[in-house]
Length: 246
Picture 1: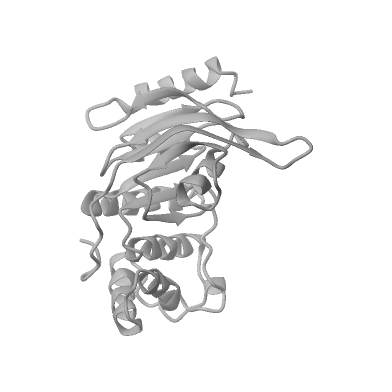
Picture 2: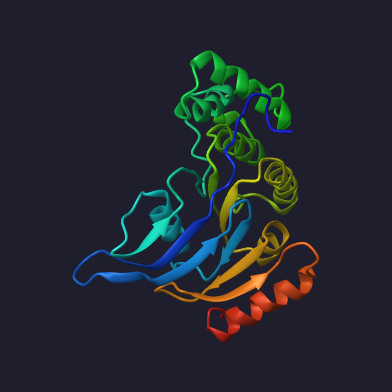
């Protein structure tokens, strides 16, 4: 179960229509080339595509960290962004880093501390609450980042290569943790990853992005009852067709 007292709103639809963005100048470089997608409430949608195609930039736009040149985004008014790096504050303990998510959601310091303790126990970090990030393994740091995302109590989660820096065994364990949390909390999740197996394992749908400027070139069902190997093959075929694989 989610940490006791953590009230996470039900997921909300996210709709992205015709989103375009160019970065830099002299001349500007098109990064998003008219992105259209929808993430239904309470579902997980993964985006897979080549490096540099604009996936992380799209999450920044959805999170409100960058403004698109054109297009609209609806339903993303309250999101929690989990970036590629854990982004833990090096001067805060693991407990304080996790509590920060609840504090930013409006909880009092005492209540945030209590919720952090419950999340620490839930995510298998008992005994490390007073450790600083430099003393934690990569898997522990990512668990802390995931706990902070949960305590932010947002109806939508944006996950940007959250486990890309972890070894295969630790990554598999984090998949199990994330899968359990998503099943319990049912947020709306938009996941960016380079790992096709990860996308198929975690998502209800896998969207394939073509080379920059980014556009969605395939929408592949990966939900319950879908053969994972077949879904992965369909993703690979779409990437090859778009010339996104070397």
